[in-house]
Image 1 (cartoon, each protein chain N blue to C red):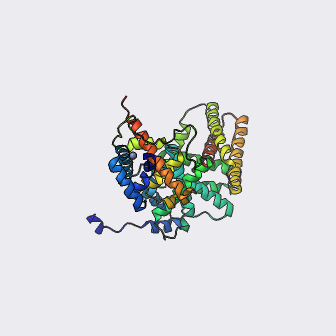
Image 2 (image 1 turned 120 degrees about the vertical axis):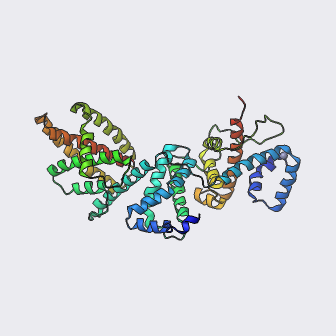
Image 3 (image 1 turned 120 degrees about the horizontal axis):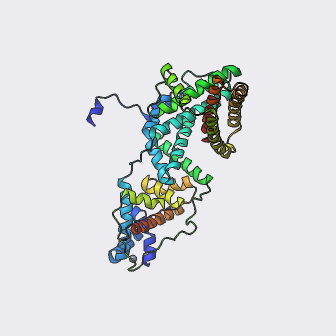
Length: 238
Length: 192
Ligand SMILES: [Zn+2]
Protein backbone atom coordinates (compact mmCIF):
# COMPACT_ATOMS: atom_id res chain seq x y z
CA UNK A 1 0.00 0.00 0.00
CA UNK A 2 1.12 3.55 -0.64
CA UNK A 3 0.66 6.61 1.61
CA UNK A 4 -2.57 7.56 -0.13
CA UNK A 5 -4.18 4.25 0.75
CA UNK A 6 -2.91 4.42 4.32
CA UNK A 7 -4.29 7.93 4.75
CA UNK A 8 -7.67 6.81 3.46
CA UNK A 9 -7.85 4.36 6.35
CA UNK A 10 -6.70 6.77 9.05
CA UNK A 11 -10.18 7.72 10.31
CA UNK A 12 -11.17 4.09 10.71
CA UNK A 13 -7.83 3.52 12.39
CA UNK A 14 -8.43 6.34 14.87
CA UNK A 15 -12.01 5.19 15.50
CA UNK A 16 -10.77 1.64 16.06
CA UNK A 17 -13.02 0.13 13.44
CA UNK A 18 -10.39 -1.66 11.34
CA UNK A 19 -9.80 -5.38 11.21
CA UNK A 20 -6.73 -6.19 13.29
CA UNK A 21 -4.63 -7.05 10.23
CA UNK A 22 -5.20 -3.61 8.68
CA UNK A 23 -4.73 -2.00 12.06
CA UNK A 24 -1.31 -3.55 12.52
CA UNK A 25 -0.28 -2.78 8.98
CA UNK A 26 -1.09 0.92 9.49
CA UNK A 27 0.66 0.97 12.83
CA UNK A 28 3.78 -0.35 11.16
CA UNK A 29 3.55 2.23 8.39
CA UNK A 30 3.01 5.09 10.82
CA UNK A 31 6.14 4.21 12.77
CA UNK A 32 8.13 4.41 9.54
CA UNK A 33 6.42 7.29 7.66
CA UNK A 34 6.61 10.77 9.17
CA UNK A 35 4.15 12.29 6.70
CA UNK A 36 1.33 9.88 7.48
CA UNK A 37 2.18 10.00 11.19
CA UNK A 38 1.70 13.76 11.10
CA UNK A 39 -1.68 13.47 9.39
CA UNK A 40 -2.71 10.93 11.99
CA UNK A 41 -1.60 13.28 14.78
CA UNK A 42 -3.64 16.15 13.31
CA UNK A 43 -6.79 14.07 12.85
CA UNK A 44 -6.32 12.73 16.36
CA UNK A 45 -6.13 16.27 17.72
CA UNK A 46 -9.43 17.20 16.02
CA UNK A 47 -11.24 14.08 17.17
CA UNK A 48 -9.88 14.33 20.71
CA UNK A 49 -10.84 17.97 20.98
CA UNK A 50 -14.41 17.19 19.93
CA UNK A 51 -14.59 14.26 22.29
CA UNK A 52 -13.34 16.25 25.26
CA UNK A 53 -15.74 19.09 24.62
CA UNK A 54 -18.80 16.97 24.04
CA UNK A 55 -21.74 18.25 26.07
CA UNK A 56 -20.67 21.90 25.93
CA UNK A 57 -23.39 23.98 24.40
CA UNK A 58 -23.75 27.44 22.95
CA UNK A 59 -26.18 29.80 24.57
CA UNK A 60 -29.12 31.06 22.56
CA UNK A 61 -28.40 34.76 21.89
CA UNK A 62 -31.60 35.75 23.69
CA UNK A 63 -33.11 32.81 25.49
CA UNK A 64 -36.09 34.77 26.79
CA UNK A 65 -36.98 36.28 23.42
CA UNK A 66 -36.85 32.87 21.78
CA UNK A 67 -39.15 31.50 24.45
CA UNK A 68 -41.60 34.34 23.79
CA UNK A 69 -41.58 33.56 20.08
CA UNK A 70 -42.23 29.91 20.83
CA UNK A 71 -45.01 30.50 23.32
CA UNK A 72 -46.67 33.04 21.00
CA UNK A 73 -46.66 30.54 18.19
CA UNK A 74 -48.01 27.82 20.44
CA UNK A 75 -50.84 30.09 21.44
CA UNK A 76 -51.51 31.01 17.82
CA UNK A 77 -51.65 27.26 17.18
CA UNK A 78 -54.14 26.85 20.00
CA UNK A 79 -56.27 29.50 18.38
CA UNK A 80 -56.20 27.61 15.14
CA UNK A 81 -57.17 24.43 16.89
CA UNK A 82 -59.91 26.06 18.90
CA UNK A 83 -61.57 27.84 16.00
CA UNK A 84 -61.27 24.60 14.14
CA UNK A 85 -62.91 22.43 16.76
CA UNK A 86 -65.14 25.13 18.23
CA UNK A 87 -64.01 24.08 21.65
CA UNK A 88 -64.38 26.09 24.80
CA UNK A 89 -61.59 28.34 25.89
CA UNK A 90 -59.40 26.47 28.36
CA UNK A 91 -58.80 28.25 31.61
CA UNK A 92 -55.06 28.30 31.34
CA UNK A 93 -55.01 29.61 27.76
CA UNK A 94 -52.82 32.60 27.10
CA UNK A 95 -53.84 36.16 26.54
CA UNK A 96 -53.50 36.13 22.78
CA UNK A 97 -55.60 33.02 22.52
CA UNK A 98 -58.31 34.27 24.84
CA UNK A 99 -58.61 37.68 23.28
CA UNK A 100 -58.53 36.57 19.69
CA UNK A 101 -60.82 33.68 20.32
CA UNK A 102 -63.30 35.81 22.18
CA UNK A 103 -63.37 38.33 19.39
CA UNK A 104 -65.07 35.87 17.07
CA UNK A 105 -68.16 35.95 19.20
CA UNK A 106 -68.44 39.73 19.13
CA UNK A 107 -70.31 42.10 16.92
CA UNK A 108 -68.24 44.63 15.07
CA UNK A 109 -68.73 47.58 17.44
CA UNK A 110 -67.79 45.37 20.38
CA UNK A 111 -64.90 44.08 18.41
CA UNK A 112 -63.68 47.56 17.59
CA UNK A 113 -63.60 48.36 21.27
CA UNK A 114 -61.84 45.12 22.15
CA UNK A 115 -59.27 45.73 19.43
CA UNK A 116 -57.82 48.49 21.54
CA UNK A 117 -57.37 46.07 24.37
CA UNK A 118 -55.83 43.46 22.07
CA UNK A 119 -53.30 45.82 20.61
CA UNK A 120 -52.45 47.33 23.95
CA UNK A 121 -51.90 43.99 25.54
CA UNK A 122 -49.87 42.88 22.56
CA UNK A 123 -47.58 45.85 22.93
CA UNK A 124 -47.44 45.53 26.69
CA UNK A 125 -46.55 41.87 26.40
CA UNK A 126 -43.82 42.63 23.91
CA UNK A 127 -42.53 45.46 26.03
CA UNK A 128 -42.44 43.69 29.35
CA UNK A 129 -41.72 40.35 27.76
CA UNK A 130 -38.15 41.26 27.11
CA UNK A 131 -37.75 42.00 30.77
CA UNK A 132 -40.02 39.42 32.26
CA UNK A 133 -43.07 37.68 30.97
CA UNK A 134 -45.43 35.20 32.48
CA UNK A 135 -46.76 36.98 35.53
CA UNK A 136 -50.11 37.69 33.89
CA UNK A 137 -49.29 41.18 32.69
CA UNK A 138 -52.85 42.34 32.39
CA UNK A 139 -53.29 44.50 35.44
CA UNK A 140 -54.92 47.89 35.13
CA UNK A 141 -51.59 49.55 35.71
CA UNK A 142 -49.96 47.78 32.82
CA UNK A 143 -52.92 48.45 30.64
CA UNK A 144 -52.72 52.17 31.22
CA UNK A 145 -48.97 52.18 30.67
CA UNK A 146 -49.76 50.39 27.42
CA UNK A 147 -52.02 53.21 26.37
CA UNK A 148 -49.19 55.65 26.68
CA UNK A 149 -46.91 53.38 24.63
CA UNK A 150 -49.41 53.12 21.84
CA UNK A 151 -50.37 56.77 21.76
CA UNK A 152 -47.13 58.37 22.87
CA UNK A 153 -45.30 58.22 19.59
CA UNK A 154 -46.95 61.57 18.90
CA UNK A 155 -46.85 61.20 15.13
CA UNK A 156 -49.54 62.76 13.01
CA UNK A 157 -52.15 60.20 12.04
CA UNK A 158 -51.20 60.16 8.36
CA UNK A 159 -47.53 59.57 9.05
CA UNK A 160 -48.23 56.84 11.56
CA UNK A 161 -50.62 55.22 9.12
CA UNK A 162 -47.98 55.29 6.40
CA UNK A 163 -45.40 53.66 8.67
CA UNK A 164 -47.83 51.00 9.75
CA UNK A 165 -48.68 50.27 6.13
CA UNK A 166 -44.98 49.81 5.38
CA UNK A 167 -44.64 47.33 8.20
CA UNK A 168 -47.76 45.54 7.03
CA UNK A 169 -46.39 45.36 3.47
CA UNK A 170 -43.17 43.87 4.77
CA UNK A 171 -44.85 41.14 6.79
CA UNK A 172 -47.41 40.56 4.07
CA UNK A 173 -44.63 39.67 1.66
CA UNK A 174 -43.25 37.17 4.13
CA UNK A 175 -46.69 35.69 4.68
CA UNK A 176 -47.19 35.35 0.92
CA UNK A 177 -43.93 33.42 0.68
CA UNK A 178 -45.02 30.88 3.28
CA UNK A 179 -48.70 30.67 2.49
CA UNK A 180 -48.29 27.85 0.00
CA UNK A 181 -47.08 25.59 2.80
CA UNK A 182 -50.09 26.16 5.05
CA UNK A 183 -52.80 23.62 5.49
CA UNK A 184 -56.42 24.57 4.74
CA UNK A 185 -57.24 25.16 8.42
CA UNK A 186 -54.36 27.56 8.85
CA UNK A 187 -55.35 29.41 5.72
CA UNK A 188 -58.93 29.65 6.87
CA UNK A 189 -57.94 30.85 10.34
CA UNK A 190 -55.66 33.44 8.85
CA UNK A 191 -58.24 34.73 6.37
CA UNK A 192 -60.89 34.96 9.04
CA UNK A 193 -58.59 36.86 11.39
CA UNK A 194 -57.57 39.16 8.61
CA UNK A 195 -61.15 39.83 7.47
CA UNK A 196 -62.20 40.89 10.94
CA UNK A 197 -59.22 43.15 11.36
CA UNK A 198 -59.67 44.65 7.90
CA UNK A 199 -63.33 45.28 8.68
CA UNK A 200 -62.25 47.21 11.78
CA UNK A 201 -59.68 49.15 9.74
CA UNK A 202 -62.22 50.06 7.05
CA UNK A 203 -64.83 50.91 9.62
CA UNK A 204 -62.59 53.36 11.45
CA UNK A 205 -61.29 54.83 8.20
CA UNK A 206 -64.81 55.62 7.03
CA UNK A 207 -65.57 57.18 10.43
CA UNK A 208 -62.45 59.27 10.11
CA UNK A 209 -63.46 60.36 6.64
CA UNK A 210 -66.68 61.73 8.06
CA UNK A 211 -65.07 63.15 11.15
CA UNK A 212 -61.27 63.60 10.90
CA UNK A 213 -61.01 64.52 14.58
CA UNK A 214 -62.71 61.44 15.95
CA UNK A 215 -60.11 60.33 18.47
CA UNK A 216 -61.82 57.05 19.23
CA UNK A 217 -61.75 56.00 15.58
CA UNK A 218 -58.15 57.14 15.36
CA UNK A 219 -57.28 54.89 18.28
CA UNK A 220 -59.28 52.00 16.87
CA UNK A 221 -57.53 52.37 13.53
CA UNK A 222 -54.15 52.43 15.19
CA UNK A 223 -54.96 49.42 17.30
CA UNK A 224 -56.37 47.45 14.38
CA UNK A 225 -53.31 48.17 12.27
CA UNK A 226 -51.02 47.13 15.10
CA UNK A 227 -53.06 44.03 15.42
CA UNK A 228 -52.76 43.35 11.72
CA UNK A 229 -49.00 43.63 11.99
CA UNK A 230 -49.08 41.21 14.89
CA UNK A 231 -51.24 38.74 13.01
CA UNK A 232 -49.06 38.86 9.91
CA UNK A 233 -45.94 38.53 12.00
CA UNK A 234 -47.27 35.49 13.80
CA UNK A 235 -48.34 33.78 10.61
CA UNK A 236 -45.21 34.78 8.70
CA UNK A 237 -43.32 32.44 10.98
CA UNK A 238 -45.55 29.47 10.44
CA UNK B 1 -23.03 17.08 44.69
CA UNK B 2 -23.60 16.54 48.37
CA UNK B 3 -26.26 19.16 48.84
CA UNK B 4 -28.58 17.52 46.35
CA UNK B 5 -29.24 14.80 48.91
CA UNK B 6 -31.04 17.21 51.16
CA UNK B 7 -32.99 18.85 48.33
CA UNK B 8 -36.17 17.51 46.82
CA UNK B 9 -35.16 15.54 43.76
CA UNK B 10 -35.46 17.41 40.48
CA UNK B 11 -38.61 16.61 38.53
CA UNK B 12 -37.72 14.24 35.72
CA UNK B 13 -38.03 15.23 32.09
CA UNK B 14 -40.55 12.46 31.67
CA UNK B 15 -42.78 13.87 34.42
CA UNK B 16 -42.52 17.34 32.92
CA UNK B 17 -43.35 15.95 29.50
CA UNK B 18 -46.44 14.26 30.89
CA UNK B 19 -47.56 17.43 32.60
CA UNK B 20 -46.88 19.44 29.44
CA UNK B 21 -48.95 16.96 27.44
CA UNK B 22 -51.84 17.66 29.80
CA UNK B 23 -51.57 21.35 28.99
CA UNK B 24 -49.26 22.54 31.78
CA UNK B 25 -47.38 25.43 30.20
CA UNK B 26 -45.07 25.86 33.17
CA UNK B 27 -43.87 22.29 32.72
CA UNK B 28 -43.26 22.93 29.05
CA UNK B 29 -41.35 26.10 29.81
CA UNK B 30 -39.20 24.15 32.27
CA UNK B 31 -38.35 21.68 29.49
CA UNK B 32 -37.40 24.63 27.31
CA UNK B 33 -35.20 26.02 30.05
CA UNK B 34 -33.45 22.70 30.48
CA UNK B 35 -32.88 21.84 26.85
CA UNK B 36 -32.86 24.96 24.70
CA UNK B 37 -29.06 25.23 24.65
CA UNK B 38 -28.59 21.68 23.54
CA UNK B 39 -31.14 22.05 20.76
CA UNK B 40 -29.82 25.42 19.64
CA UNK B 41 -26.19 24.25 19.66
CA UNK B 42 -26.93 21.31 17.43
CA UNK B 43 -28.85 23.55 15.01
CA UNK B 44 -26.02 26.05 15.05
CA UNK B 45 -23.37 23.44 14.40
CA UNK B 46 -25.29 21.92 11.54
CA UNK B 47 -26.24 25.22 9.88
CA UNK B 48 -23.41 27.50 11.03
CA UNK B 49 -25.89 30.35 10.95
CA UNK B 50 -27.25 32.02 14.08
CA UNK B 51 -30.56 33.13 12.56
CA UNK B 52 -31.26 29.80 10.93
CA UNK B 53 -30.31 28.03 14.15
CA UNK B 54 -32.71 30.17 16.18
CA UNK B 55 -35.54 29.61 13.69
CA UNK B 56 -34.88 25.89 13.73
CA UNK B 57 -34.71 25.72 17.52
CA UNK B 58 -38.05 27.53 17.59
CA UNK B 59 -39.51 25.01 15.16
CA UNK B 60 -38.13 22.11 17.22
CA UNK B 61 -39.90 23.32 20.35
CA UNK B 62 -43.15 23.89 18.45
CA UNK B 63 -42.88 20.31 17.16
CA UNK B 64 -42.01 19.15 20.65
CA UNK B 65 -45.13 20.82 21.98
CA UNK B 66 -47.28 19.17 19.33
CA UNK B 67 -45.76 15.74 19.79
CA UNK B 68 -45.07 15.69 23.49
CA UNK B 69 -48.07 13.49 24.17
CA UNK B 70 -46.44 10.76 22.12
CA UNK B 71 -43.31 10.64 24.29
CA UNK B 72 -43.66 7.41 26.25
CA UNK B 73 -40.47 7.55 28.21
CA UNK B 74 -38.97 4.39 26.72
CA UNK B 75 -35.93 6.31 25.56
CA UNK B 76 -34.27 9.17 27.35
CA UNK B 77 -36.04 12.43 26.75
CA UNK B 78 -32.80 13.98 25.52
CA UNK B 79 -32.39 11.24 22.91
CA UNK B 80 -35.92 11.77 21.72
CA UNK B 81 -35.51 15.54 21.55
CA UNK B 82 -32.18 15.13 19.82
CA UNK B 83 -33.79 13.01 17.13
CA UNK B 84 -36.52 15.60 16.70
CA UNK B 85 -33.85 18.28 16.30
CA UNK B 86 -31.79 16.36 13.75
CA UNK B 87 -34.94 15.66 11.72
CA UNK B 88 -35.84 19.33 11.77
CA UNK B 89 -32.41 20.38 10.53
CA UNK B 90 -32.36 17.74 7.82
CA UNK B 91 -35.84 18.77 6.66
CA UNK B 92 -34.58 22.33 6.51
CA UNK B 93 -31.61 21.25 4.38
CA UNK B 94 -33.85 19.32 2.03
CA UNK B 95 -36.26 22.23 1.67
CA UNK B 96 -33.32 24.35 0.66
CA UNK B 97 -32.29 21.74 -1.86
CA UNK B 98 -29.13 20.74 -0.03
CA UNK B 99 -28.14 17.24 -1.06
CA UNK B 100 -26.56 15.57 1.92
CA UNK B 101 -25.14 12.66 -0.01
CA UNK B 102 -23.13 15.00 -2.23
CA UNK B 103 -19.47 14.57 -1.64
CA UNK B 104 -18.17 17.75 -3.19
CA UNK B 105 -19.65 21.15 -3.71
CA UNK B 106 -19.20 22.97 -6.96
CA UNK B 107 -15.86 24.70 -7.02
CA UNK B 108 -14.76 22.95 -3.89
CA UNK B 109 -11.15 21.87 -3.71
CA UNK B 110 -11.10 18.12 -3.23
CA UNK B 111 -9.39 16.69 -0.19
CA UNK B 112 -5.71 16.51 -0.90
CA UNK B 113 -3.63 13.57 -0.01
CA UNK B 114 -0.55 14.68 1.83
CA UNK B 115 2.58 13.60 0.03
CA UNK B 116 6.25 14.02 0.81
CA UNK B 117 7.44 17.43 1.94
CA UNK B 118 4.74 19.85 0.91
CA UNK B 119 4.19 23.31 2.32
CA UNK B 120 4.18 22.55 6.00
CA UNK B 121 1.86 25.00 7.75
CA UNK B 122 1.95 23.70 11.26
CA UNK B 123 -1.29 22.34 12.65
CA UNK B 124 -2.37 24.80 15.35
CA UNK B 125 -3.60 23.69 18.72
CA UNK B 126 -7.28 22.97 18.06
CA UNK B 127 -9.55 25.47 19.74
CA UNK B 128 -13.22 26.22 19.57
CA UNK B 129 -13.08 29.38 17.47
CA UNK B 130 -10.73 27.93 14.87
CA UNK B 131 -12.65 24.68 14.66
CA UNK B 132 -16.04 26.41 14.34
CA UNK B 133 -14.67 28.59 11.58
CA UNK B 134 -13.34 25.56 9.75
CA UNK B 135 -16.56 23.57 10.23
CA UNK B 136 -18.43 26.51 8.74
CA UNK B 137 -16.45 26.07 5.54
CA UNK B 138 -17.44 22.44 5.09
CA UNK B 139 -20.22 21.53 2.64
CA UNK B 140 -23.45 20.66 4.54
CA UNK B 141 -23.11 16.92 3.94
CA UNK B 142 -19.63 16.72 5.45
CA UNK B 143 -20.62 19.09 8.20
CA UNK B 144 -23.65 17.02 9.17
CA UNK B 145 -21.71 13.77 9.38
CA UNK B 146 -18.84 15.37 11.28
CA UNK B 147 -21.21 17.09 13.73
CA UNK B 148 -23.23 13.97 14.34
CA UNK B 149 -20.25 11.64 14.69
CA UNK B 150 -17.42 13.60 16.27
CA UNK B 151 -19.32 16.30 18.15
CA UNK B 152 -22.53 14.53 19.08
CA UNK B 153 -21.10 11.03 19.34
CA UNK B 154 -23.41 9.04 17.05
CA UNK B 155 -22.46 5.77 15.40
CA UNK B 156 -22.22 5.52 11.63
CA UNK B 157 -25.22 3.20 11.52
CA UNK B 158 -27.44 5.81 13.18
CA UNK B 159 -26.07 8.60 11.02
CA UNK B 160 -26.63 6.60 7.86
CA UNK B 161 -30.24 6.02 8.89
CA UNK B 162 -30.83 9.65 9.75
CA UNK B 163 -29.27 11.02 6.58
CA UNK B 164 -30.58 8.30 4.32
CA UNK B 165 -27.12 7.32 3.07
CA UNK B 166 -25.13 4.10 3.30
CA UNK B 167 -22.79 3.37 6.22
CA UNK B 168 -19.93 3.45 3.74
CA UNK B 169 -20.89 6.96 2.62
CA UNK B 170 -21.15 8.12 6.20
CA UNK B 171 -17.67 6.76 6.94
CA UNK B 172 -16.06 8.20 3.86
CA UNK B 173 -17.73 11.58 4.39
CA UNK B 174 -16.46 11.67 7.95
CA UNK B 175 -12.93 10.95 6.83
CA UNK B 176 -13.08 13.57 4.10
CA UNK B 177 -14.57 16.07 6.55
CA UNK B 178 -11.72 15.49 9.01
CA UNK B 179 -9.09 15.76 6.29
CA UNK B 180 -10.64 18.95 5.02
CA UNK B 181 -10.83 20.40 8.52
CA UNK B 182 -7.18 19.60 9.00
CA UNK B 183 -6.34 21.51 5.83
CA UNK B 184 -8.51 24.46 6.86
CA UNK B 185 -7.02 24.60 10.34
CA UNK B 186 -3.52 24.58 8.91
CA UNK B 187 -4.48 27.28 6.44
CA UNK B 188 -5.78 29.44 9.27
CA UNK B 189 -2.40 29.04 10.90
CA UNK B 190 -0.51 30.20 7.81
CA UNK B 191 1.97 32.91 8.78
CA UNK B 192 1.05 36.22 7.15
ZN1 LIG C 1 2.94 7.37 4.56
